[in-house]
Figure 1 (cartoon, rainbow, N blue to C red):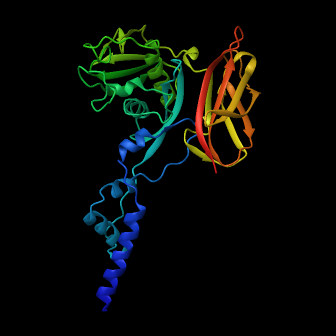
Figure 2: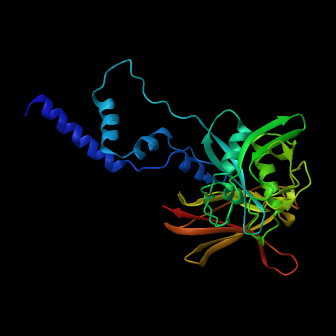
Length: 328
């Protein structure tokens, strides 16, 4: 075998190993879909899934051959896309707001980046929902859009943040009679909390459509400009572990709550059965949010942790949040 054949054999083996290792992803869509309750873990470099996504043999040959044999100093390596983490707000089963982080391309316009992410993001937690996602042309909500809705600009000026949309943000589904299971005014709060958090501002939010203020947002009449309402937030939210995380034992569970007299009740289930339970107290209470934390020893396996409070009048479980996780 000559040197040329030997190099070809090594390159072929390398390509096979590389093809087995790469898992294609859809670039921007996968970035926007990875929404997690804070704190978020660092994602992988986002340029590599784009290269791997074009899993055609020729594309991989070109990329691999560049690394292996191209010593031309004039050729620069690909530059990773700059990203940043933005906090998005979703709704839970009770119609309350819960927060999560999304890694998005960083354009330098934090407000615009956040609203674009809100229009594209699907929460990882199956108990969380994002109605703003249904305004996109490629949504799978089943609601018939009269026209897709996109965000044109987010402009903070003084004590006002103006969010301008292109498309019928007042009522995107005029041909559908919707019987909302939750208060649709929550959707305007969802937008306001997301925008204010992105800009680190308490300024009220004015929603416009092609430059004109609207009287309704996603079918619900709204008083503008919108002020964030702390009572729109879920009284209990687990922030760690994230949905689907793998952790070591003892597992630490933490979050934020504003429960009656700071009491947070918790339980851990496996296959639907409670394996351990207890309670803790939060640093916040009676409408004022603060952190809570507890630790539990668990053998390896798959679990669901629930945090909640009891209704003081009838003892029923209320304000429940849950996360599925694995102990290794």
